[in-house]
Image (cartoon, rainbow, N blue to C red; front, side):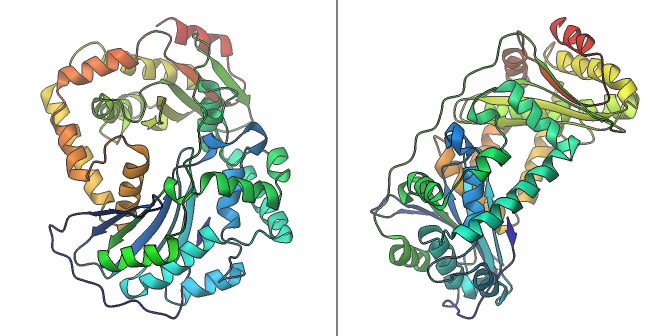
Amino acid sequence: MNLELSRRRSSPDPVVSSPDAPVISHQLANGLRIRVAPMLHTRSATLALCFGTGSRYEATEEQGIAHLVEHMLFKGSARYPTAQSISEAIEGVGGVLNASTDKELTVYWSKVASRHTDLAFDLLSDMVRSPRLDDEELDKEKRVVLEELGLAQDAPGEWVHQLLSETLWPDQPLGREIAGTPETVNSQTPGSIAKYIRRTHGLANAVLTVAGNADPDHVIKLAEHRLGDVGEPAPAWVSATSAPESAQVSIQVRPTEQAYLAVGGYALPRNDPDRFALRLANAILGDGMSSRLFLEVREHLGLAYDVSSYVVGFHDAGALVVAAGVDPDQSHEALDAILREIDRLRQGPVPETELRKVKEYIKGRTWLGLEDSYSVANWYGAQALLSREELSPDDALGRLEAVTADDVLRVTQRVFSGPWLNLAYIGPDPDADRFRERLTAR
């Protein structure tokens, strides 16, 4: 959902924060947690209402409802009764209004000039607490979501990641497409939408984060006034179950010019103590143009235009994934090269020079990303809702700095052991048995 919005009222002049201003933490009586992160030299602020919910909280018949709810909240509320009134309100002050739905986190946020934080707060709180769930608007938005789903399926380089998720976590919420299916999306009603909101959007399951040039005391007063009503308890999520213990290969045959591979296996849950070592292992393997995979598979062998790896972590599960776009005739050679680099990483300690380089890479990318107030607001919202202990960026990078080469070796041997790998493939008809044999021969 992407709306850029605004309006006419202004907040009190913001307080200029000091460079070392700490993050302010507060909790309302109804359980709503508040985090305010002052940022010096900004003239704007991002306000985010983050909820600990997403597609893994859906029942089978509800697939896609979390994403559909996100869309519907932009269609009108009690004080802003139409989508047009919402967009005119925020665009009237040059602001941005947006939202995102993931598997365990849903975020509604607005970025405005600091003097318009009252407006952004009024708009966000009204959308979330008093949405208008009109039948006609719901029918329109279903069509929009189905178009969005179709676009995703038409992009094989993106859809191969969804195919791998279904392979890793079959027949369960973690493996499902966040947008749902045409059947489940079309089955939703204003009543089912309202029921889902009541179950998942309680304020005890929420964090309000504000980052930028904003007065923490004023933010808390706004929250008490607009969001101080009774909170509801957090919803339950469906525990992840693993796929069969042998390597799985999922193939979609399409007449594409490129073949798209996603190779992955189970890794660590979000809060595992080894997560910092795994993040370093992933960066060494495939994060960036100086990573081992990029240098070997693309620069040395010329087998792929793009190859990279990433880590995902959930409450009780995780995965490490390597993805590549390759010439269909070279897909097996590319898989062999990827597997060799995975095996090399678990065979001995990383050289200290390489470990130092990748630590500096992660630090630099982290700080570059956190120069934007939205990223800061999202960081603290995710920390409060999803982490067992809330870490500042400095805290997290300190944990990362403490990781040794032996720690990286230990975590790679822990994660890359046994029947670890699964494969998703989209492209011209391949030799599936050859894929399977290579995965199981390790």
